[in-house]
Image (tube, rainbow, N blue to C red; front, side, top):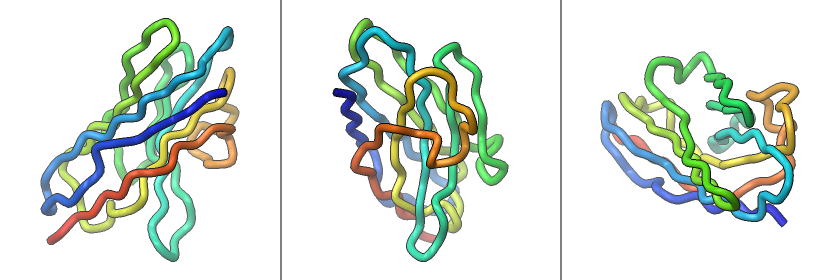
Length: 126
């Protein structure tokens, strides 16, 4: 069973930076693509960034040039990261780590993903 656990959220001033982490366990025998999806109160879910099992990356237009997705791979455990720089007042949301076996058919859509973490809250103060 794939389990995803996020950490690293918090409160930061506008222009500041945060690094989110997602510890993934339970990957057995298949290659997984992963991503970060966020949702703010009253807003639709928004794909932030994604990385395929073979290393291709995608970013949402609102975060390009500010956020970076990367991961460490071990045999059975992976850690996915989201480095968020130059945070803006429009970035606050619950940030979720998500995973799907194989190729992500639409990597910035939330419904692409099968497995989800519990989320970590990001707050930006102006």
